[in-house]
Image (cartoon, rainbow, N blue to C red; front, side):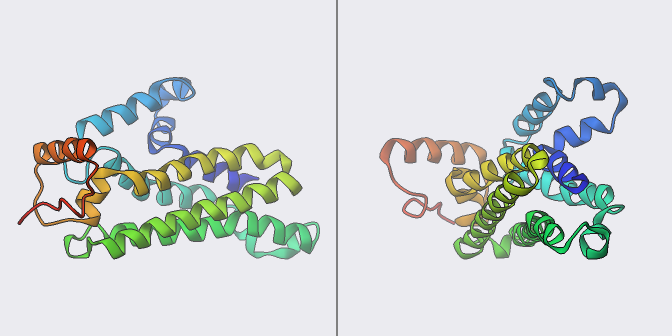
Amino acid sequence: MKIRMFLAATTMTPALAIAQQHEPFRGVTTGLMPFILVALIVYSTRKMAIGGWLFYFYIGLILGPIITAILIYPVIGEYFQPSLWYDLQTYWLAFFSTMPALFASLVVSIFAVRLLFASQRNRRNTMLLRYALLGQVTLGIIGAVIDLLYFPEDIILSVIALIPTSITCLYFFLSQRVKYVLENWNGHWNYNDFVNRNSTLANTGASWTESKPEG
């Protein structure tokens, strides 16, 4: 129960996690403050190559594991000590509803960090990250089903954790910025060129591969 709560809290939004650490914000974390923080982060970084929603993803990539590690450290041992559980069946169900998602998050982090290096930005490595995200979503769904069947008191937290993961996966498959900066990176970044090409491709129906920037 505790580890699911921590995962849900840290995967919802980095902004929510940040807001909860500051006394003036705690009373409004269920309101608009997290969304305002998200909007400010996305808008203020939009002209950077790794900016906008992509920048926000990397904030979560850095803050999420750190916050999660700090919060779950006191209880993580329970998932490696079957003797502390009522019976082995309950233990293994709880283990497989939670731990694979943590492992998937680690794999996603490794593939995503690699794409921060310009020399590693290509279609193959970007697709590996997309598949890792898809695997993370799949494991999250499996975990949610286990919770629904055996731990119904945790299903809401599982769904809360699954929603941002699914949105991130969808973003990496559909985002033009991901295609421009990560999949077809040519070593140069110009925000106006990115916006103009994005608009042109939307009107012509061409793909980024067909209209890869020169240089």
